[in-house]
Length: 260
Image 1: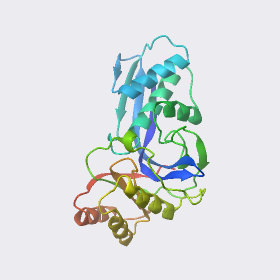
Image 2: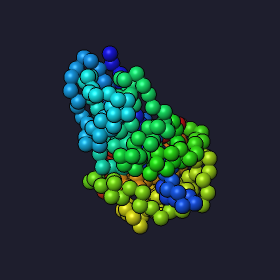
Image 3: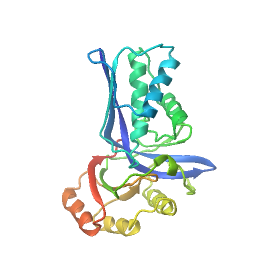
Image 4: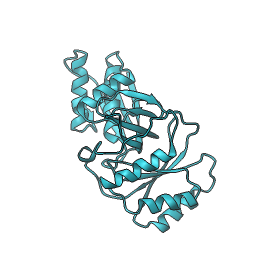
């Protein structure tokens, strides 16, 4: 028996704040993953942190399982403390994989509730870009995106206590559109400068625009930013080099896509 479950991470958030008093997060899912493998071909539990172990125990209790008879291995492409939803991806992948090993499964909304009971969550269990409540895991609205934008992910360095900064935003959504809104992404990122400032962000946004980028987003409780380019952009490597030359305090982390 072998079960593999993958959950996407994020490049921060497209926007974060409040709408009519409710905390709202618009997800920025990417094609990088946390992966859980469960098998009877190896033993022991590998790669799980404190919160992921709590999720394992939580799921076993839900289904009335007294013990876990298989080997479980968690690996991740997502760096920690950067605001890339590594913890949410780990929790959701563990929950779904353990459920499947018991002949069960969770819906996306059920995963949201489970993850939010452990910590504020990033909504990576929902397909595509969505607006959701990070404190409850509840889906609010699906956001229509017409293309898989290329995302160049840059890092300011260090780590952030994501729980300390998580959801600390006074940004009020003027509306909650059902389509991706680039102006909203910009406003939310700049509003977050009062909470977790990122050096030279406005200048970086202006420079990215000269390179043909369509948006710059941030991890509102992390250290990364994403520069969005069109799918057919053929000069990405040169543009990444240009950013690094202009903003030498940034580190290029990875190239990925917006998962829609």
